[in-house]
Image 1 (cartoon, rainbow, N blue to C red):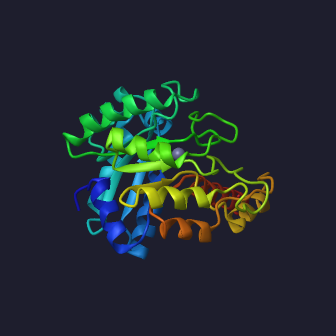
Image 2 (image 1 turned 90 degrees about the horizontal axis):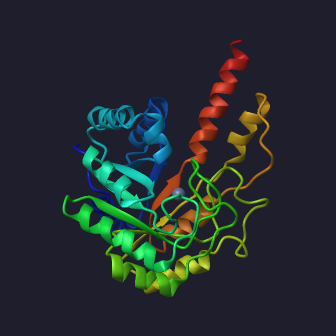
Length: 285
Ligand SMILES: [Zn+2]
């Protein structure tokens, strides 16, 4: 199947009441694993590249690997998405390359670290929407600031939870197709120091935003579950992960019942590949 726009995929997901996994990739092996899983579960899938991954792969390697996936798995609806674009120029370069969806993360300034003002965020996101929609490309925006750092991108710390009223204004002023919100999740393996409850994972904020914006596709970033079994494999074969908790699957499912259509996962795939490599190296010295 040719690549599809993310808007098409998320509209279908909204009709069907399900969510779509969005997985970060850096190399061929990750793409192979994701596509095999998509085939096994007969699921549409979003594969996404961060700025770091694009730089690492000189853009072209990763682009053609993703294109190869669409040819090798013709039955799977596939979106090629830019994760955390930091400027209009970065988003434009992805669109020119052939991505079918881009994220303009205007919650941070172009340095990818300093929180931006609401007006700065609206302005830069609106420009990307104008540019992208002319070419049928989907745009994800972000309001509120996520915690942690991903591939050098992020404000660090615990972030800033999204204000529902601001989310409504942001969507009206920018025309984004999908909206990333900050509800206490963060990027990376160390999200929570114990199983998260409502004091740190603000599902009530998500539910309130969905009530006010029932027609908008919501995106949960930092949604790796950081499963114990994957942590155990890494530590069993010489790794040194400290005890950590991610976003429980039942919270993701609650999100899906409340407008979440795109679920971003990076850490879990990294844990899986790290554990597998360690195991093979130790068992086959
Ligand atoms: Zn993210």
